[in-house]
Figure 1 (cartoon, rainbow, N blue to C red):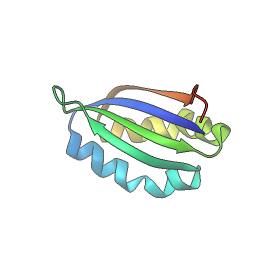
Figure 2: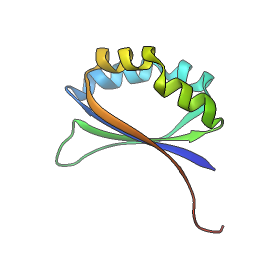
Figure 3: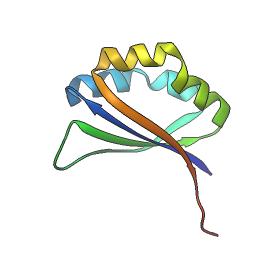
Figure 4: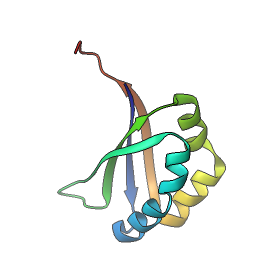
Length: 91
């Protein structure tokens, strides 16, 4: 299974979360399923989230789309990063 681990540093968590939640249908259409969302204990405007990825090409296209950058800017994202990961252990 491939997952996408992201980190966003945001200006205001509540504002960011509202926009993030409103984007759920678009994420679903891209084949991304939110698995977990965390806030840093020391810096609560530092947010980490993990998605299950059904189609890595669609996921890459989604996060590199200029509309995604505009949505991030609108929601107060100051900086962020995403990484595609797969398990390196045998199950």
